[in-house]
Length: 177
Image 1 (tube, rainbow, N blue to C red):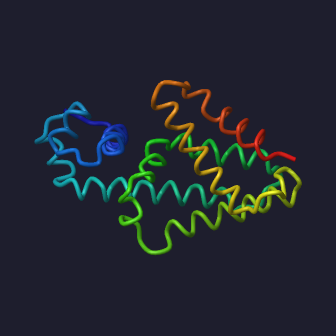
Image 2 (image 1 turned 90 degrees about the vertical axis):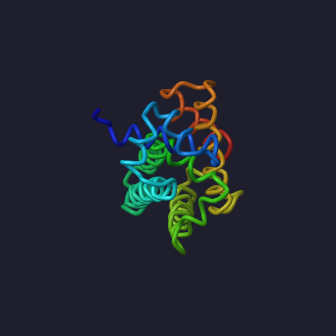
Image 3 (image 1 turned 135 degrees about the horizontal axis):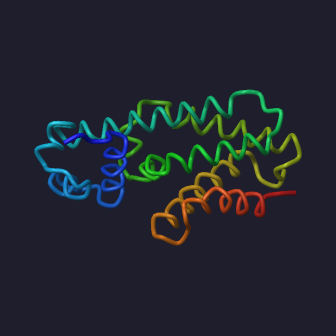
């Protein structure tokens, strides 16, 4: 049986988000595959988690490339930042696990967060975002808002199409000048 590896990885990551203590059998059941297939593909839960973290590194890299490039239109860059987070919602939600930071190498989260802070400082400098909060606070608000909205989608309170619009409306409605 052929598997779509990305879809399988997303299912397994969501199962680990919902229940970090899942056994390999529970993970296989949640993904709709046999335990033997799961073991053939990932062999251990640790290797599965390492694969998820590696995918999250790719997401961090995509986000960082997007926010490091020069922005002629800050709003368009903000929309793209939100879109990347929404497109990769499974992996973004995986960052909320208690043990996520233990799985990262030193400085990986800080690099992502520091780039976010610089991006939001740029938004303040161009007059789109309020100066009432530091760029770091806006970064914290953004991360919390994104994960909260992604969880709303997970719980069935928002459609996938509504996620980006809701994040932008909540972010800008709450901190716009």
